[in-house]
Amino acid sequence: MTRPRLAASMSATEFRRWYWLKSELAAFARELGLSSTGLKGDIAARITAHLSGCSPPPSKPKVRKTATMPVAFTPSTVIGEGWRCTKQLRAFFESQCGAGFRFNASLRAFIASGNGQPLSAAVAAYSESLRQGPQPIAAQFEYNRHMRAFKAAYPGSTHAEAVAAWRLKREKPRD
Image (cartoon, rainbow, N blue to C red; front, side, top):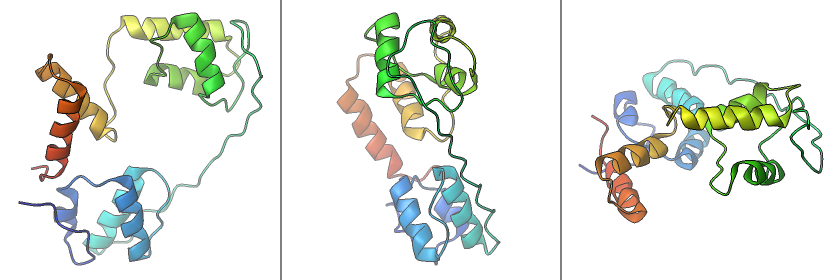
């Protein structure tokens, strides 16, 4: 069975059976006259509701935090409200944690809610999150979940093999 084309005539059940890129969902939402902004899951929910003949869920208002971040960071720099995980902040964490540093979910959450905490506390929180091992990957990150599961199932596999398996998987129905 091959993946169908997105069409206003498809059922909501058939729509949910397949993996869709966010860009595909946004284009289809615009075609249906729906809002095409927001998270991928929100766009999919609007489309599902439309295909089911229901009113789409209301769009969540976009709250944009704006923050002034310092040019240079030190361990005593205090995290401000609305900070983003920028390349400058990445450079600071790489200098503190090493070249293998990655903004993981725990650290992103700490930065988002760590208003008033020094960056040294963020470094400690990051180190603790690494000691706890891999954290669950949220459902909306299907590709990342696949990659982790594939690498666990096939430890000697290459990245190219995992990507090829993903491409095959997303072309098949979920059930």
